Length: 542
Image 1 (spheres, helix red, strand yellow):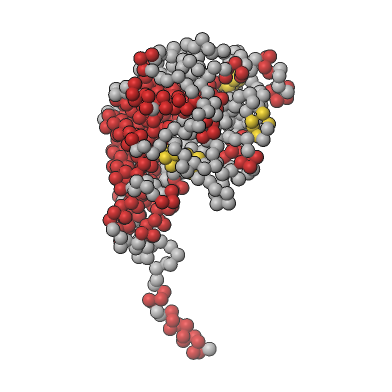
Image 2 (cartoon, rainbow, N blue to C red):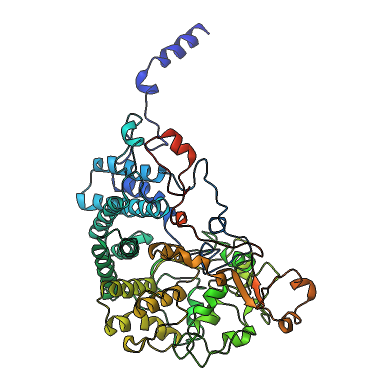
């Protein structure tokens, strides 16, 4: 026993054994030594990719009026104590990589690929924070516990942050490979994000009168054109205009689809989702305002077209409309689930709030309906968005020609068999949401709203166009027209609680009005952060 005790204490004196770096954790001393380390570290970023999964997306806009009212637009959102999007942990993760990657014993060209991945994701995160909070602290280096002067600094002006975001994206475009294995980022994906970010920032600067917008608008166009000129992408079409748009969003495999710049892939056993089932039970619904936006098949808005049949019944409202109407909104004959066909809109149920049931990404497959068993892929970057960015950026720059429209908007219209947009023939819609903008920009915005519905872009669009007051439009919280004759076709207990206004349109939130307040362009900072850092000031109005 004495000998054993001596051996134990002797072993405890071996500092070289006890003072070792952890083998299971990343540390500066035992990691970042080779390409595998850099790749493994960067893998964690990919959960931050901006996916378009459809479930409840755009419920914070004029496009939808979900059964559950959006608290932000309803004016009942309260300043959080903590959280609310004010979290810089992911930025810290990126900056930690940038402080340590250079130790790897590999060429600079390989290192720069992973630096480019890091800057791509850091740029996207900072852009999200700018959209949410406006001015934010810009931290581009790894902060230690002693860096309190940086940690508790003030907010950097929006424009300066976004100039740094563009710098990061420019590096990413320059150093990501043209092709990357195993679904990693490539140059075209960075171009897609650059085009998206620059369009947002350029139009924001224009419509909020902060200046210097043309640099961003031109960069948005340049990035979009690089994608268009690559010859790698096109609009998905099989020559069936009544179904191709709908079918695009219920595909088991988007890899190889000509419209997929970057897809999110789901595979049996490996990774599945529950989106298909959620879309059938979300209590979601497009607004009357959104339904009215669809053109008629002659290319004219409902306010100008002789083809419009009115909206006394769902069938009449869907007649002679842009084929995307029936490919985004459930109409008579839509296969809800395995042969369960829609005859009347399923108001008064968990299927839809307004009667305009969203069906983008919603299939009739029993296999996809099974809980968490769907393997339908979803888009991260879709080529249709790129074409819309090019058209809008060119129009905002005053450089949009008929050739521009033919290469962008009319490619989308060809898929669904709609008449081409002809600039010389455009007539201003007397019911336009944007009476003060040129008709060309107005119609490009309409096309964007229809093509990208349910993909989560609409509130960001209203923000950058300085158009939050569109939330005040009463039709944004109205559903389909429910005349007494149509109500009589439903089981009484299903529709007994549905309230309509004097014109028989369903009122989604009886007694509640959504009233826009300009403070809603930005979210509030958490109170805890304001207490900890006196250099931070609350956003206006909160």
